Amino acid sequence: MNAPALAPLPAPPRGSPRRDRKTSARGAALRAGVLLLHALAAAGALAAVTAPPAPALAEEPSAAGVDLVVDGAPWTLDPDAVRAAIGRELGADVTLARAATAGRSTLVLRGEPDGRVTLSYSAADGRRIERTIDVPEDPDRAAEAIALLAGNLVRDEAAELAAALGKRSPEAPAAAQPAPAAPPAAGRQAPPPRAARPAKAARPAPAPPEPPPCASPGATTVLFGADVLPLVGSSTSTGTNVVRRYSLNLVAGYTAGTTGIELSAGASISSSFLCGAQLSTVANLVFGPARGVQVTSGVNVVGSLRGAQIGAINAAAGQVAGAQVGVLNAAAGQIDGAQVGMANLAVGASMDLQLGVANVAVSKATDVQIGLANVAVGEATDVQLSLVNVAAGGSADLQAGLTNVAAGESADVQIGLLNIATGKVGSAQIGLVNYADDSPFSLGLFNFIRKGRLHVDVWGLESGIVVAGVKHGSEHFHNIYGIGLRTIGNRPLLVSALGLGGRFSIHQRAYVDLDVLGYTLHEPSTLEAAATIAQARALLGFRLFPELAIFGGPSFNVSFSRTPRDARLSPYGSAPLGADDASSTERAWPGLVLGVQLF
Image: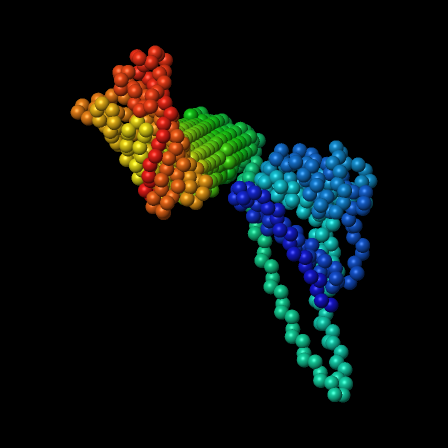
């Protein structure tokens, strides 16, 4: 008989990229355990097919369903999510209950002090079985692991496998030789012999489970200990390979771990873990994972952190899920939380928030930096708010400060006095001086867009002013600089022009420019200002050739001068502003602009 085909293992549910990135090493060990459960189930089914009939074993829950009692499970677990996951695994109704009911199948989920969970199953026929496992930190994966364990307990797959294997003889009898095949009929050729099926490769042994985060293998657990120095005090008799619930140290203490509170007038040192709180005046050192809080006026050091560090110097050699608050904060793993201090350094897969005078993040994804100087090196930077912001990597979403530098492929928005983007600007640059490789909108007094527009314009006004200038900028915004001459009037005047505007393309060869300019008229001999014109204009341009266009349109002009005579710049008259006609030094009139543009 052919062996039954084994069902493929279900793929673990996928979360967001950020969640997959943050899965801890404990998840890998759990997945190995889940594979072992599936292997047991498959092997049990195979044994049941090949072995002689065995006595009937426990059946799965009936349509009446199963009760689930949650007794002090970890706070990160959602009881309703666990109930739903178990229901999917069993294919039966699962009901949350306050307590077990006699004569009804019941699962009881209980949290253990070391962070693990125990799940027990009491069947309606009185059978009871329980297992204790270490669950991953991610709530969804934790619910999946508990559901798989529930299926294992309810079906009692391990017991079924043991029963099936136990009934087989120590030495399997030789396989019966198949009867000789009947000779082929006359005139019919015998079929070729069937090739032997290759043996299946053995599955690799599952990885050993990782020790629980609040335990140290081989260490002795004690309620209380007190030391003056390591091996001077309680540790003189118990040694240092102990886990203390409460610990008190005068100068320094050294233990395997703490599951409660450790107080020290000097330093507290744990070789394996911390699950609780360390408070000292000089230093707290944990050479392993820490779940809880470290508070000192000196130095805090952990392997990885799930909680908080508060001290002058805080350091984590791995992931931080919580906060570091101090003068100097450093983490060599991803930060799911915040660093708050004078100087913050993060080197890891991702960083949520840095708040300080100087912030440095070397990370694939940096969310928010707020300080006097921010530096982010990585694939993506979300927000930088500071006097000086530097983002070197793939992209930067928002930089706001006096000086902003985005040395990457793209920058979305930069707001500051000086904005520099070595790549493409996605939305806008707003500042005094803007530079970008390419930009749709750069608003500033000086804009330099390497792949932007650059034109040479020559235009004239109804007031006898002729100007030659340069128009350059981004796709939709430009600056205008020009010099010229007023050729009519009682004397010639030199003219300088400065303006800005926007462009809207209406056709491949036609466009509309809306500009605001200021003209200053100077005495040729002294360069002293004789009058100033503020102008708003709307121009329609048309390309005659790829390199040449003509443009023209109406304008509105306001002049300001020292004398009423110099304010009268319009050849066909103007209206006084705020004074009688004879003495007004401020006048307004509509005008006309005509010119040519070279591309």
